[in-house]
Length: 172
Image 1 (cartoon, rainbow, N blue to C red):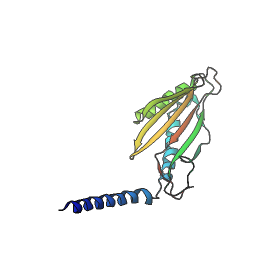
Image 2: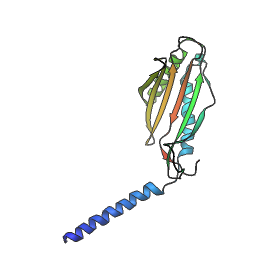
Image 3: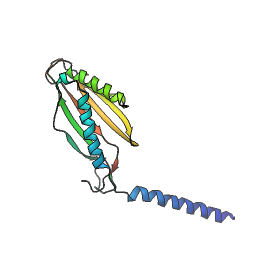
Image 4: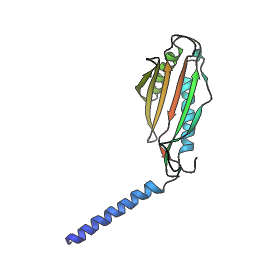
């Protein structure tokens, strides 16, 4: 084969590959948001169940919504994720928040979640721990924030659950 013919074959193969990959990235609008919403609700219930009953966990009404990376076009192909947030009030017992967070961490780690320290705020009185796990080839993230208040009032944990990314589809 002549040099020009080989070059033409390489260019044709590259063009075919780009069309194939471009079609996958641009054309898909089937979202997984409904599945992720249901999974996040189930995860939140499980997390609250990890808290010992003697700490009297009382979950507040959650806030959950579609999130995206910033100002976009709201196109069906935009990358988005489902985010769930909930506060859980605890008994007015000093250390209830620390104990609840430890029980949650133990339960999540037993279920295969990888834990790492995320941050301390309020001079170390608020602590956030992050947990990651791949479920059905998608990376999920859970953040549990607890308080170390010396006062028994205001003991709580805060839950954030972030789904893997998917396309927006018809969701708004």
